[in-house]
Amino acid sequence: MNDSPGITCEELIAFLADYLSDELAEPRREAFERHLLRCRACVAYLATYGETIRMSKCVATAQLVSDVPEELVIAVREAIRRA
Amino acid sequence: MRGSVAQSDMMTGAESLLLERLRRRDDTAFEDLLRLHGGSLLRVARRFLISEEDARDAVQDAFVAAFRSIAKFEATARLSTWLQRITINECLMRLRNRRRHPEEDLEKYLPRFKDDGHQAAPATTWSESAETILEKAELCELVRRAIQQLPDTYRVVLLLRDIEEIPNEEVAQMLGITPNAAKIRLHRARQALRTILDPHMRERTA
Image (cartoon, rainbow over all chains, first blue to last red; front, side):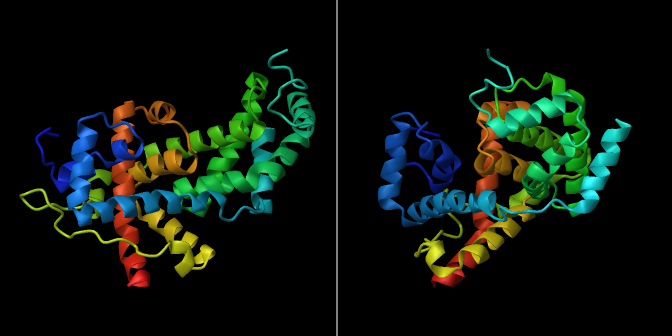
């Protein structure tokens, strides 16, 4: 990524994860934020990328209650007996 | 005493008692352990392997592995955490044995750019919070299916980092890649997931 006044959308998106996790050092961070001031598409991309991460976490808590199928209990019992 | 069954700060009293029974090779202890934790482990395995049969096989093998190595469990972490890691490793082993070419498959989900570096199809915001548009369960099902669409290599790293919240260094070790490679894969996986979700989220906020 070059440090000249402007970075491209492609360069910004390539380093998006580092920016969000606060791992982007100055002056790259400055170049990043300057680009965001003038590029609505990248502001939208950043927002929806963050939403994607947040939304993905719902699968961690979905279907909290999941019974163990009885066939699996029997299979594990037998497998342990043979182990 | 670190590692002692009854004195680990991480374990509840009930878990400590169960661990004692497991170490004594009490016949019903592993079955109790399975009934207690098997449901959530099956859920984890399904995310990684998708196939119900593969997920059940992975959980079965995880419990056999746990049975064989229970003497090595040091009680510095919860039994559930230990079992979860064994299950994830069983899933990763199965995925490594599958023959796929995920890299080619992911490209279609990554953003495209013009010669001047601008986005070829400029992104737009999902203007309302997803939760206000979709029922939570419906939204989660959408996300779950979208994650399943990702090629294995990328789905795995997204599950390990963003869902299981395992630190990057550890994920890199589990996958046998460098930490930088793990970071790059995660970023690509997130980008791909965003692309898959985008038409659904735009449609609902238009």
